[in-house]
Length: 265
Image (cartoon, rainbow, N blue to C red; front, top):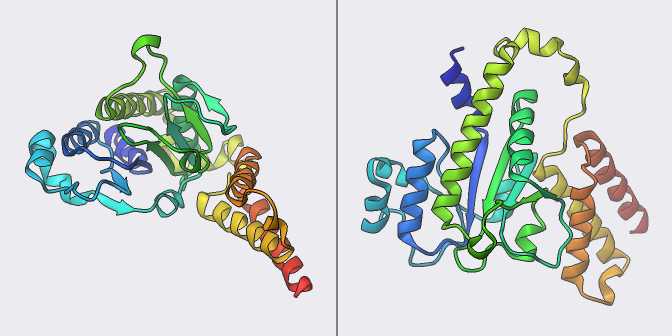
């Protein structure tokens, strides 16, 4: 497989979610940036009601990439992320929620290493709306939070600029990793490498199921009778994500909670 073909196959596993996007010009510029770098089309999460993907402003700003405007998907955040094993949220704002922060350089290395390690590894980059960024609830879905190292007085990037920066450097980092590790070009050799014995992290869909199992059990034992239920649910979610639970272990815990619920009935 040629380098560019292999690079393209990895970039197809990188997903781009934009929450609460409002400005058509930004959508057009994001679309152009992602197509310039060979990335997948964006997924819009709860965009402004008047944001039309085929509006003249979107198509104009997208320029030569305007034909891809019809590939833009609409989704809720949970559905958009469910196939990913790593979810990186980008935000310049501090929130009152404890999420491991990772530098941009560490983000790129981690994404590249995992894409080359696992054939079914998918990663999602999540960006907040132009005015307020990602909320606590949205950030609680992320496995890591990343911020750019920018001038303190002017630390906020236009969302399309942020997308271009992440897309270009992600592409460049993966390409360099492929060139450094040409053994990845040979599937047979990859299967013989020692790192394949490392267990696979759980995908978001499995973690959602685990979270729902815990919440259902909590409802059954009246755990949420007192206190702030939403806050408790976020803490449960963060416990699951922060512990980096592996796929097999998550499925075991889901079965365990299911059996407890059956015994309580």
